[in-house]
Image (cartoon, rainbow, N blue to C red; front, side, top):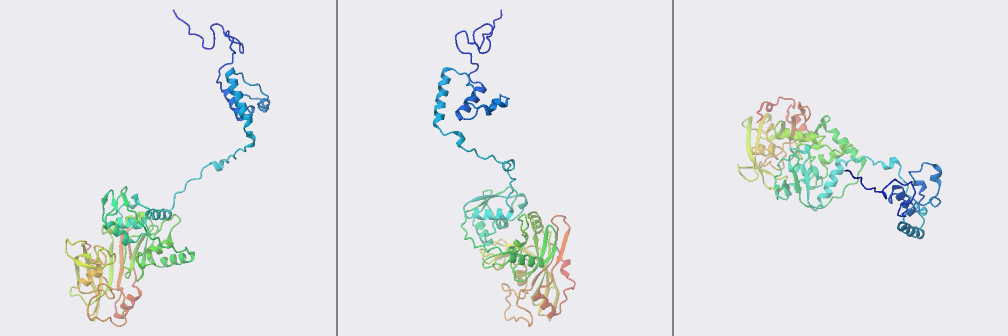
Length: 463
């Protein structure tokens, strides 16, 4: 036997016509919370025109009829009392028509503008500002792979002196993945570098001078020996520092800012030369090229030849110098290097091949050097170690009662004559030679040296 479920709308039996009262006398009002009733009640509470907002009435006349003239919806007695109170409160409040609606933005205004990331110059400025405020953690990016820690910090914080960078690394204030590091340690992508809080005396920036920047750009371009989309090789003149330091305002690294591209990328240094050493200096135009060229130097894929004018004539016309070098003052970035023993603190192996190209009256020698390693002041220290210091060297020339020959200037006679390095993109060798600087050209002419003469150092070993 089956039973029928009870009816949910009223008494059992046949349905009553619409609008008819129930058998118990209750008004047949339909669902108490119909969507139409809710919309009309909300419109009345707002004091708005319910007809204009009525989505169920398609006629224009109905939409134009004010809400006050339209018949009120049927409601129970309790619901009518609530609506009466709402109407009383509405009469006390200011009419909604007095409140001006906010202007709706146009479609072009509503569409958000595409976000453009900060340029590299803005990133460096922000990093420098953050450095002065407190501790921060830097993440090594993919194109910074293989960079030395000190070079990494110098690139991220141009306002931080290089000597200060070496100091905080040496004292253990800088950590890489939670561990202490050395200045010459290499970084890999994804490493976290913790930078300690530093209070820097921000130097007063020179006002940007378009005319001066144009002059700097023209000066740098006048030094270019080779250039392509990835790198360029400059003929660095005597007396121009590669990087800034104490009291050094004009230097190659600062002048390169005048060649900053529209994307904010400034050409980068790949290696260094002493201030008084002239000749070939490699500059990378992109960070990726800088990382690739730096790897070529570390792997000794780059071949370098230097020319020098030395005092005296070596007994062995072609030889090899292998020593350990360490700084006299470890805290001084430009300290004099001394020959040390294996195992001494801060001592690094240095290897140089040399050959005598020509000599003058058994008093002066034209020496050609091929360094295998790249230690600070390596060639100058090795030349002094074999008893033939380079003419004009203020740090390592120590021959007593030695007089400078007439017509020769008391300037360092050392030239980065030639460099051969694989191209960072193609891998093909780039071979560039630099001319003699003016003071060395004068000495070569005075002594009768021919700069086109064959250089025997080319045949020297590579390692």
